Length: 556
Image (cartoon, one colour):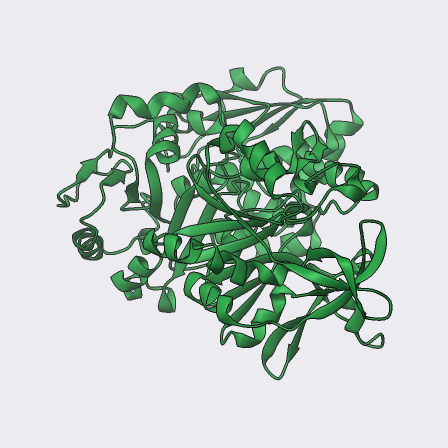
């Protein structure tokens, strides 16, 4: 009761100390920490950020126990000191000799109470030192493993743990892939034909190196390892499945995306705060999907001053093509829709750059007859809109090819979105037939389509067709996720034509275009997701938008 009242009516203790520190010109800060590993990302990262808001040149040091020292090295710009006497769960005090020379000493910081402002706002970013990259090699592990931590290993939080018999049942059903056991506690034995027990055999750095290079699916309780993996500021493909008795904890309570654009997170929440209600079937259904990103890149770069494909426009030393491809893991499949206007130049560019070590498949969208101002056919042809992606993909033979490779979902992205995430978990989680990615609509979005719900169905409506008396809270940002079977089925559907006036070869003409979002009327299950434009949407339509997009990129 007192704690609740104090939080409501008394000044924030951290802010109070920091204001006084800044006022007297101090900058050396010492903090003690003897609690959990996950709190380094979930709480102490925010405390460090808060200190730097008040004292930008602060020199921050933590005193901690030996088992946490590696975790603190992932906090950029801080130092850590080991007190060999400290043990987890024991009462502790910072040695008076260590305190000498510091301008502010905080023995027991309380992130739970002091930095609640960070939830839903601040994305922790743990810095990985590349010198640890190859640590996984000493274990000689096979690729494509399932990584598992059986227990949260928190003595007072047994409610975070899934029953051992269910773990064994899961292992019995996953006989086709190696399973790596992580953690420290080795008291419970498990059997599996390809089980590799690493419990108690890895440092934190070795564990994170193994996860980055040898694990494709990681199954964890709400634990410190889950937090460290989720907030590691590295780009690597991982399917993270987490178990939750209470979703008001850990990374779910933090409620921000991972800084890893290739991390796909599937949280499984138990009924009645009882993890024993979580079934093995539910876990099996959460395993990774085989994803095919499709990049829509049929346009020319005329408005950007580029002779040729728009994807060749350079920003911050890379083309738009390279920015997109660098977000994908090596050998990842990628389909690129070009047009007859830029196909040869696009393919030549990728050949020159060895396809950026990706498995790339090109296909061309269809061209349409244009009409003059009297709606009579004219000479030039023009691409017939992004809605042709379905038919063009199928006609190119890619539907059959990728069906044989086990692809079960597709994501759609536009070349001009600098922050597009080809493996965005927001598009994949809960995907049944179609997922639509939207952003909160602002004044600058007046020329974008909007999300509307009519008679229980979601639709995208072009801005030219909006009712000016109505408010529309969400704008369509271009990202789409599709079930692969539904996507291919749309190749047999004739989508309606929308007549759009455009300049083709310097001539104003009417072009009949198909819009990709017209497929929504054929879907039974459409799921909209709202994402943060600061992390997902930086369009480059013309020269006027380059500076803003670059500024958003720098802030990532």
